[in-house]
Length: 339
Image: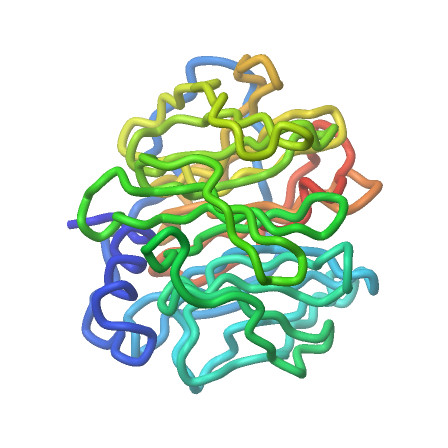
């Protein structure tokens, strides 16, 4: 049986956001069953709060895209939430209170990020190949980008902004067919022009700028590798290279965050854990939930408090969708906040 994220996104691809029922709940992995790391230290994340339970209509829940707003509250998306349930959730981490700020009848939102240009919250709709935006309070939905890019409609997974507000997308095109057709796509901040920066990728997933905005780190789910792509003045070049090969075992590379020291936090789909590397590829640590934790299958993403080191990791499985916390290796910056 496919693991949770691959299965859920494939279901969305095939059936669309309105027909998710009957796809099952997947296997019941536990933190205690994970293979031990071979390098770096172990950081144990602690349960902070449960945000969701498995939805009856879809048979799963999958939290993603944690991002802090200017008000200090954390925004999280639930990829597989049906129309009757919150698809975007705002969490007051001081009070441990959560509330719905947005839902609709069609979208399957896999990431969230605030734009430095207009301050709106941007979401990637995997099911419909669109990027939409909301006001910070969840109102005023707009379509930012829709349609084909170089003859093919995107399967947008994660997103990242440069300092000017241009958007970079990990396009998982080809995921459901098992074909290496994934791309990295740049969309101008006005939403008019889209450019393919890299293609021929195997289920492009995580994406984040490095700490200096000189290049992009991105992961490929079905190859367990992280690549580096120079951008900036060299935008549009194809000078990417494989930077890190992740020894994940049955787990696969999901979303990526980068802290103030340039360290990469690589989320692991199929294991409730994250692998942490420095910019030169050295494995520094593994973040994982406590041993014998049942019903959690994947850690999809993390947001590190801007200017602080407290990190909030989204973890999901048959037990529900949770936030877990740990102390990051360095302070949070925009690159460790959403995407």
